[in-house]
Length: 357
Image (cartoon, rainbow, N blue to C red; front, side):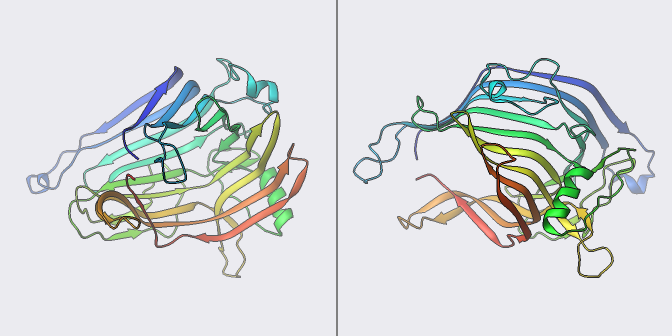
């Protein structure tokens, strides 16, 4: 594709309730000065309610004419009527179709987001709480999906209560459906009815061709500071980037919405089961893990034309997770077609090359 562009239209409301910057200076002996680096972190508490009129990717020449797949006319891939917030009740069809599904008070909560930057370990991110301890997470409404023709809607997308709070009720329902025995670890926050599992990530820019990373086998809940999820990372090529992440998510609903009807998934849990007592049965909810995903620009031989092109290369897409879906439904979640458990998902070694066509 050629002559492509992104557009962002509309407006948003973003309320920062707390912004705290921590910086600590420690006296060092002369012998230590050469190894010293600044230590600082930013801590954010946010409440968010956002509306975006449209997000559009334009392919100005479309699929080439004469190929049997297109006529060369410009096409778009877009989202229209994008709204983020948090209702304390299920989103109705009227809410979904409203010009403003969320009021100023329908704010999604993001608490204790800590960003720490280190000259050796890159950027580390720790998000303690997405949503509240009652299961009210981030709601996302996309009223129109645009696939090709900007004037035609392919339906909409609804995501309700995206959160890292794993409620006891949802976990109990999943355990009953799939014969599991999972529990969550006490988050130390005195929450009732469930526990938060922190989202953690590290992004490292590399300075040479060699990369050696020791990834921790388990992630402890943070105490006073960000718990690193990665051991020691040797820096490599400056054009390369390595990403590690660990997270658990609860989602009340993900649905495609069309003409008032829904096809969706309800009661989703994304996690990684841990066998703590060695009996071969997972008994604890741990974080799903993305380990040492590398992003770099490379010379790549096109599989179609045989030409050498510049490509974005995503290598070692090593993602390990379990995914429990309590209901696959048409209409409403109670109209269940069944449930699905994906156990031991492992994408180790997967690679992707992305380049213009």
